[in-house]
Length: 82
Image (cartoon, rainbow, N blue to C red):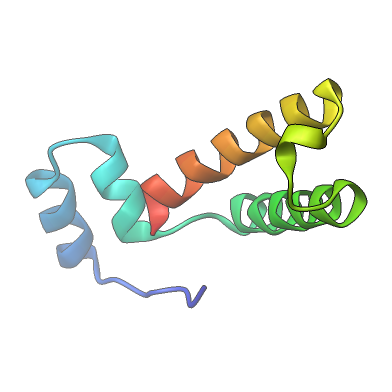
């Protein structure tokens, strides 16, 4: 994700007009750490599919729980920043 640069006036205007913290986060974008964690989550989801196949109904319970946990975290990231 490309990092944006803002002037002080642009940041102040964004802070004043934002209704929620999530709106500000969307404008600023993720931190490097958040972006790295998102890439790790996506890689882990890919590995689950590689290991257990596309039919999640045949996955062991622990793999489905892991998928749900990681996928929910990734959805929250994407809802905030994408």
